[in-house]
Image (cartoon, rainbow, N blue to C red; front, side, top):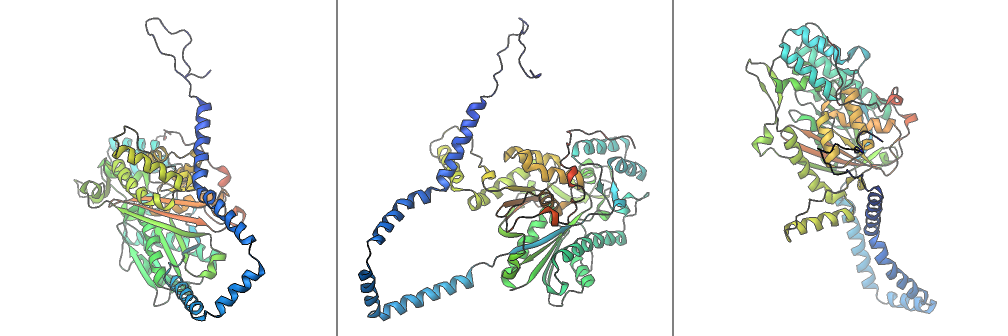
Length: 516
C-alpha cells in the first residue's frame, strides 16, 4: 500500500479517523450519468422531431397520383401566387448570400525556429546575467529560483545581443532580431503555401515592445516588395494577447476586402527590452521571455477552402482596462535607478482570473452544448432566485473543444487554468511543452502549441481548437477554429518535427540550476 494509506496501528495518544478512499464506482457512474444527460440534451431535437416526421411520412404515403395532378392544376390557374412566392424566395436567398459573413480560412502557418547558436540553457542564462555586473547577489539568486520553478528547459533561445558579454542592446541589433524572426517565419510560410507576395492584400504585424520607424510592417512590405495598395497595420503595446487581436483585425478586414489573402505576424523583441536593474517585479520577465515568432496566412477565397487547415469560427475579446488595478498589473516603466523594464504585479493572477471569467461568459453560449448551458442556468437560478448555498457550476469546455492552446505565459498561469477549467494533462501538454522547449514567446506561443498538436498527429477533421491568451491592459482574448481536414505529421514542416518523438517530457515542480 502506498505511503498515503492510513496507519494500521495509530498511537493511542493520537486518535485518528480512518481515511476513506474515493468511491471510484460512484465516480464512474456519475461520469456516465452526465455523459448520458449530455447526449440526451444534444440530440433532444431529433427525438422530438422523430414522431412528427413519422406522421408526415404516413400522411405522404396516402397521397395518390390523382392528388398530385389536382395540386398541379391549382398551381397552373394561380400563376400570380407562384410567381410572387418564387420572386420572394430568390430575393431572400440573394439577400442572405450578400449579407452573410465571409468565411475566414487559415491556409497555413509557420513558427520560427532559431539556429542552434541562439540556444540558451538555464546555466548559460545565469552565467550571462552574472557577467553583466548589473545584478546583486541576492537578485541573481532570485533569478535562479524563478528559473528553477518556471517550467523552462535547457533549449530556449535568446538573441545574440543579450548572450554577448558584455551585452549590446542597440537599435541595429533589435532590427536584426526582428528581421531574422519575421522573415524566417514568412519565408517558411510562403514556401509551404505557394502564395506569392503580390497576392497578399492585408498585412498585420504585432510586436508589443519594439516599434521603430519605419515600422515592422513597413520592413515586411519593403523586403517582400508587397503591392502598393496593401492594407498594412502595425500593432504595438498590446501584450501577449495581441496575436489574437491581430487575427480579429484581419478577420474584420477580410469582410471588406474581397478575394484576398491576409498575412498576420506575431512576435516579440528581446534585444531592447532586457532589464538590467534590480527591481524584482521587472526581473521576472528576463527569466520567462524568449525569442520566437509566427506567421499566419488567412484567406476569404472560397477556392482556398480545399487546401486550408482551419476555419475561424469565433473571436471574443475582453478588455479590463477601465479598472485601475487591471490596467497597471503589467506595465513598462523605469525603476528607481531609471532603468526601463516591464513590471508584473502581484495581482496578476487574480486579474487574469477575472478577465478569463468575463471572456468565457461571452464565449460559453457560442460554443457550449445545450446540456452544459442548461446546467449552468439552473445553478445560476438556484443561487439567485432561491438563495441556494451551492457552488457555481463550471461548464465542461472539454465537450466544446478537442484541443486547447493556452498562452504559455508561465507555469502558474497554466496550473490555474488547468485547475479552473478541469483540463487533463493531455489537454495541457501542448502549452507545457511549448513553455519548456521555447519559453514564453509572447503572442506567438499559441502557434507553437498548435504546431505541437499537429506534429503529434492529434488534429482530425472537424476538431475544434480553443486559443486563449492574456495580455497587458488587461486583456483576455479567445479564438475558436474548426479543422477542415486531418493534418498528417508526415507532410508537416514545423519546429517540432525533428524532435517530436522526444516529447512529452516530465517537468518537475523545481528543477535545480547549476552554479554559473
